[in-house]
Image (tube, rainbow, N blue to C red; front, top):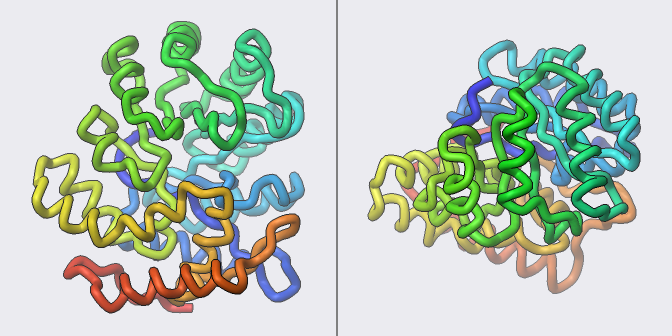
Length: 304
């Protein structure tokens, strides 16, 4: 498992019956890889994992590993209400052929460090798969502090990476200061990717990449190779879109962007509902402006 580059937090496409559209997801996965993404992250927040049954999650992981065809790793996001269910999902991901796990705190319950350490430790130990810890205190209410991350790194050889989504880019520096090269740090907030790379991040679990993969890969590559003028020119164009990844309705908004760009549809499972009214018009205006002023780097056409 190589933790590097742009790995989409891939959306879960729903058909008109609100069932998982496996055929579409196969094409979407392959298109993302065709445009330079280095891996696929399935079943994350953007993948609407909280609304999926265990059987649906298993089916998606089998579908994604088959779609990737050994071209790139598939990483399973492991999130559940209970530790037992999270462990079962981790084992199912291994059986499905995933190369890594992205480990989240449990849904709903925000425990203290002793409890959260026990939870993620159980998942780390469930399989030999390489693991990324997902730290998103804004969304999940649990904050894995840099010192706690360093403690976990000392006790688990298969703990290899951190998706840092605290929105504080200083966390990247703090983790690296305590762990050196022991852990690979990924940025998990779209509108902090250039700053995160400057602080030492080597990867990006991205959201808007679902509609703009080649543009996302170019931004990452230019930023990490020090081509600052190219990176910031593309960043300025991209930022109005990337900021959609940082608000409570990011799932609905990114699905809407996919519909506007012909790379998916806007369907989401309740309790989420598609954006309407002023929110919809604002989203469409941002996408339209982006398409009218598209950069030279463009993703290949998506075949629906």
